Amino acid sequence: MASFQLENTPNPNTVKVNADQLLYAGTIEYQKALTPNSQFAKDAFEIEGVEGIFILKDFFTITKSDEASFNEVTPKVLDLVTSYLNEGKSLGEDVVGAPEASRELTETEKKIVDVLDKYVRPAVAQDGGDITYHSFQDGTVYLQMKGACSGCPSSTATLKQGIETMMQRMIPEVHTVEAV
Image 1 (cartoon, one colour):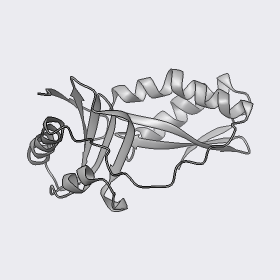
Image 2 (cartoon, rainbow, N blue to C red):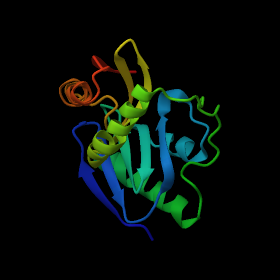
Image 3 (cartoon, rainbow, N blue to C red):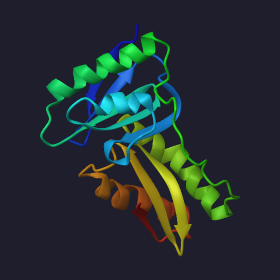
């Protein structure tokens, strides 16, 4: 049986839940507003106040609505996750969608992804989030914020003061960093 440890994140509407086992082999994010195809996500969004679930290997985050209370939402989500794990069901099953376009990255894009993977993603994962590469155009890197990073009040400061500064220092072609 899985055990969980809760942790606050910089996002006041998101809590990080660390698990003692692998939850999902990849990264997946469900947002209530996007009508997910996953049965797990559908079940999670039946819980009043749940707005988002983000899963990255051995932790997940729960994003609640402004009106909801973590004291009400969190135990119900933990029960749901435990039920899925005990029944051997995947938290990412039945996800339907077009595969990401696979194209060859430019040398600059490869450097950007490398910096993200080595320095940025491990740090933001500690706060219950993830940041992935979206695109690079005319000196601007576009990144996608996930989990606790999505909608976090401090994410703009992290993006501009931390990530943008690092990217500019390490990759001269980068002039600015924006969220998509």
